[in-house]
Image (cartoon, rainbow, N blue to C red; front, side):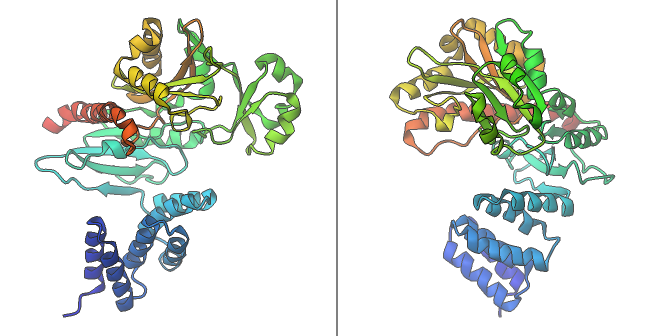
Length: 421
């Protein structure tokens, strides 16, 4: 008996999950021979090709899928990944918005035994969402996504706890307002309440965190791009100073001004009507190397995530120097951050966490030569990465896992009163 297209797609998904790539590809193609317009077969084949690094071929199939099936949310979701890989951010954005529009509620089912914790994640298409893959263990949680901009008046699915994943208020204030409307409709605990995200913009953080003893922040303002070339800006910020587009992270759309003569050239690289202008915080050591640390906040506790060292002022852990000495500093910070940076800086970091009132977040910082904490960024967008496959970084894995477990423990503990009732 000939298998139906639906059955072939089910087999293909099983084969792909088991790593039987050739078998999965054959099953998808056979399904399409039976039903050339089968949306799930087209989407599955596109996703399979994308997983093999064939993003261009995947895009052709997936765009044909959404041409024939405009409301197929899974195809739009895969296209977000494919277009991002191809560097077409505008297309990725359009498909992201369309996915959320046609599917404002989606569920990752529970795969454990007993009663799950029903975790409602409030997310945004037009915003920076906290990455939660590390925390969504299907053996513990049924995970329900709702798109804040598109859920409208639809009833909220049953849930035990809410985690607002919208982590940045600078990209779009409208998504924060949408999230506030969503969480106003629940009686369950809300983690990372949108009002705390609203208060954690770079400019507002620079103002309020500077009042904490032992903390220094950049002089900062959000200004129209037409004012960036004003001489008064150099007087206020000094040289060098930094320009960045609000709502972007990991060094994207971020430039350093060493000479006012550079401004016109740099402005050509920075889109948007407004820019953040900020003074430069210098963390160089005696050897001229920059230092940057990240501390995570989970349920009021601090967890070290990394220490980076490098020659470039725009420093991230993935771009830092990773020789033996640098890894030794990172390992020491992970094992005992207070011994590495000092008691006073640790006290300042605890005070920063208390001021932010985030249930989950992070602080990127350096130290000046007087031991003050120099805050670069503090918000809920910080990511806990997966373990690095490079054996040289195996020492990091237990610490990354510790943060992930702490987040999951927070979800379960905060939800318990509702689960048990």
